[in-house]
Length: 194
Image (cartoon, rainbow, N blue to C red):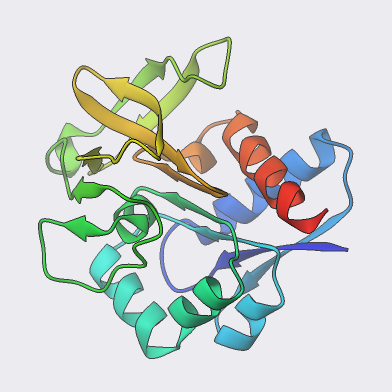
């Protein structure tokens, strides 16, 4: 059975678990969706979700626990949201550990502080109807290499990027009632499982 791990180091872990379970049900699939903390737990997963939180803390814990090595060696697809987007990048504007799985540079807190959080209807390449984006101290991507696919922007700021089986969003899909981002990611995971 397919296993999707929600990396339980910090952030909106429970919300991502609920949203992933809802997406699995909506897609009429059978999958285990579980919180994971260790490299061996991550190694058992077909896909990993990295939630928002403090990217420096999450990045350090990923490195200290050899989770980065396991993800790369097993080529596990990753969905990274907010802080997860920062971690998926190859470069950011702060010295910190990164997974570097998507060829892009990410600007941390690109939309400003917590009080500048906002919601926006997003036009994303993979969806016909607008997606409800929730932005909280959100990053954005810049210098995205052409082999990666930009899925969405707000003005000139890139807020969703896909590369191989990885997906990064600047916003928090787990804080909406809309499962389409999680469904998109689950399809990427299925492509690797089959």
